[in-house]
Amino acid sequence: LSIIKRHPKAWQIDYHPEPKWDYKIGMILTAFEKLNAQKKSQIYYDYVKDYADIFIDKEGRFPNFNPEDHNIDFINAGKILFGLYDKTKDSKYLTALKTLRNQFDTHPRTVSGGFWHKKIYPNQMWLDGLYMGEPFYAQYTVQFENGAKLDDIAKQFELIQLHATDPKTGLLFHGWDESKQMPWADKTTGCSPNFWSRSIGWYVMALVDVLDYFPKNHPKRNELIGYLNEISNSLVKFQDPSGLWYQVTDKGGSEGNYLESSGSSMFAYAMAKGANKGYLPKKFKAIANKAFDGLTTQLIKTDPDGQIHITNACAVSGLGGNPYRDGSYTYYVNERKKDNDPKATGSFILAALELNR
Image (cartoon, rainbow, N blue to C red):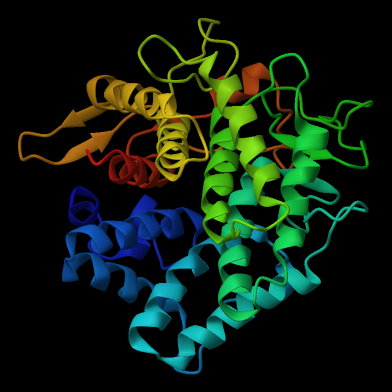
């Protein structure tokens, strides 16, 4: 309700000056959908539907969509269309779903078969991209294609596990350049130099969300559950006594590093859902609750009128581009922080729902 008060229309979230189909808003609205399933409020449903209807015309077209952009971020907000189509049976939502699904057929891939993060980042897989694309792809292929593409989805996680895992810490590097040409890429491994908590957060959320669509007898399901256990066990070693995690995951206490709300919320969600679904041992529910306690006691503030704000969220981080981002420790700890970043608010609501808090 604080989000709706600040932004009466969902497209205004993150203070956008004009409507934009946006992965961040997609995550918040996915949380609103789950909230509505539990609380049954027309307010939440209308907030989601209004957003979709601004961007999709009566024929189901996205007027501002250029498929040649090959930007995997564009897919994420499409997850809200499944529920809208199921409820309304309006064919425009199905047409829009098909448009997004078709992106996977033409999206550029690394030589080994991984989706590029974006056309402007050739040969690169970033952890963020697994969340942006795979849960949508999994839901679509199960709902409309009898699960035909589940192996392709599992392949994306296999590549990240194989190439982006650090043998020392068990953590995952933010990005992997298969060509090893990017200045930020290690010349031997192709990996970026640091661990960014939110990128790992995107990855563990992607795992628990795609697992919703892998049937128990699918040969890749246990493999994905194994990945979730590996990374979750590694993350626990770096959890601060407060229950939170640092912006640069393995360098708690180093100068400039700080306890960051979006990554901590994402870990809380993924661990709680993983424990609830039986993918992770039950102890991870307690670990998630400890993280949630850290968020509510340390990083949430409440206005006199009852509005809730989440603080200490990294606004944005990336690799390469212009101006150039080198993936160094100094880079990550100096990106700006902000309150109520949707990547924190959305994952916080998802965590609250999984923890029933």
